[in-house]
Image (tube, rainbow, N blue to C red; front, side, top):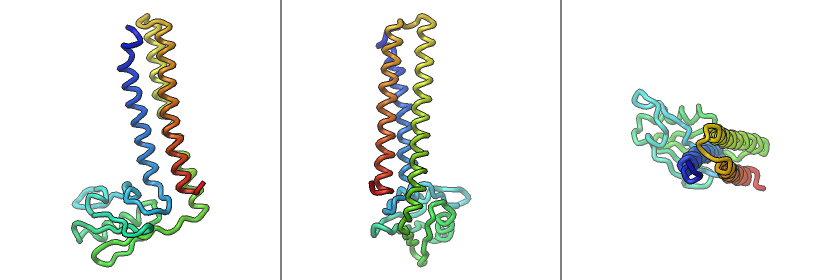
Length: 189
């Protein structure tokens, strides 16, 4: 086996690391920054038709102004279930029901709440970095095992370890950038 034969492993590694970044991106999209975004409600699930479904499958969501989200149920009989689900979420939102639509005002964030959300974002980013590092550990162990079995040469192992570290550094940097951007949105610096 040569270094070129390891390319499949690097592709798999990159895919697993990309999945960690996608997870961090999704998690951070659910963190409120004070500006309305329909992705903020992605974590809200409504009890409808005997099952729990994502809010965006039972209502049309729009943003008529920067600090307001409007949810218009496809089925008006689900209005109270949608309202209940939004109130029960840990988003701290208080929807107003006018019989036709739910108006969900986004209260401005206090400095303390912004810092709390920033700590949460840092925790999400660290979890993502840990997943990337775990993928690196798995790959390094596979390379060491291939060397021990004399399937690859020491040079190929060294090149492989360097490639794994390069992929790790790139993905950790992407997570750092996501965290920095979210912090900027939250704290304004």
